[in-house]
Image 1 (tube, rainbow, N blue to C red):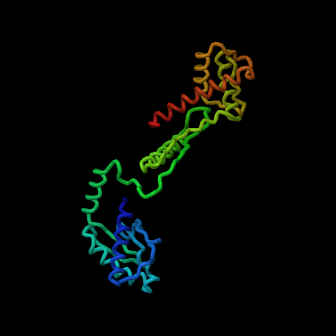
Image 2: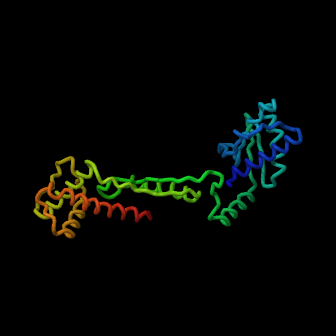
Image 3: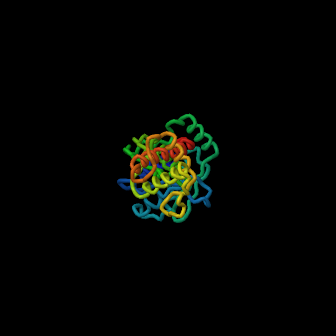
Length: 256
């Protein structure tokens, strides 16, 4: 349970007791009552709207109702330093420094479980991220997506959801055809000293293709690179495989 849930439960318990003493009227449900981070200008730790939610039912202004509730909140918690009431009726709570010392100790002693939301329903998630077309190494934008996707997945896993991570390899379509043709022309450049048709805007001009081409030449002695149409199918598989090696290396460098 986090701080906000903890104090929301305390506030609910307090208003229940106040209702038993006949000091306030409470609704059948506490929907709408919350505890949250207040704006920084108020220099406090938690803010609650409880007085505003109960105002209409009690036929009192939120400010007057807050005057009834806030002293009781403070009396019931020795770790609260100050409570202030802010228009239109927010109750703002500031903790003593010892509260945060105790809080840090609790986090350390429960490091493996602290922060898990036990109340939410646990679901199955398939998180697809990066999934760049296998036409070359990843760039910084892809790596940013990789880190973001991995963090999201890890948060879900920490909260005990069932998570599968997926990198979707799309090795079909015009981009893959252009990529394979680019590798083919780099192979021709190496084997037959033909100039790479850099003027062709459909091709990938990156130098990484030279290494891919060399690897394919060295590991495949059977294929003949006279016509693209004759080797396109096999060359696509080999080119994508080499490109995926680059991608996997990129991902391993950021521990994925």
